[in-house]
Image (cartoon, rainbow, N blue to C red; front, top):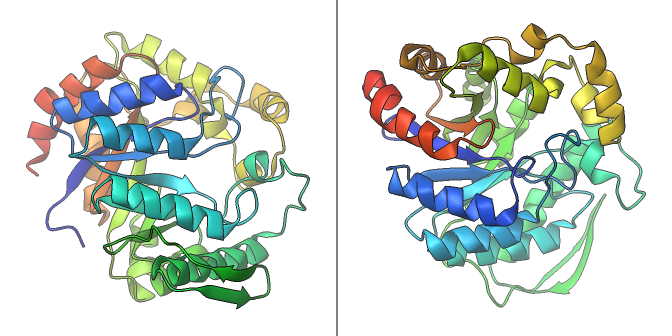
Length: 321
């Protein structure tokens, strides 16, 4: 587990293009942040968000302009759209570019991103089984030894990473239900989730998980709270979709149809919005009180520098980290 609770910065590949993402990462470094995560999507959730750059190119740019950062994916899916052997190669290179400060967050993905080659979208239990095998394939390749693997889901023949990582490459497993928490405890070096749910943390720990628990949170700093809530709803109405819809819907157009029935309060909920530092600090506190070790916060919208300054000067000092 982390030595002390940490606030990191989350970059949204759904909202921003590659140049802006690299610039924002360097800006985070300049404001004292040292932990940065980035989402990996082929499509945004809706056309209003409007972006979906290739995450591995952006990670290379981040490591080049801000080499002090600890960077990682939150999260990538190494099972369908991209074969785990290719993700292993990409992650090995990213680890070297980041001088060993790279972490690979993985999950079972969403049909929105993973069906783009025309592949069948498997049920949840099969996706978890695929993820377990994918992580085993990647770890074998990271040894730098030649790998031949014939498994249930993947085949690798005479594959060797000549540019292998030179330090441990941690794998953090994302999930929301008990089965994914148990998988994270069994095969992962940490657990990633989004809600400040103490029961999820307890289940991960009870299943034997000893690595850090990392939360992904959204916020919308702004001078006017109502305007900030409106912006959060305009860009992220999908946050109000219940159950497994986020994993099962196929296209941005279908997401947009589904979110027509989502009301603002359902989507924004208790997300910290507006200019009150105590509101934002209370949201962060909820994660730490639930047992999280790190929280990576995404600012919704274009006001990234004021958000970073606000968290550095007004929010984080209230948390006594």
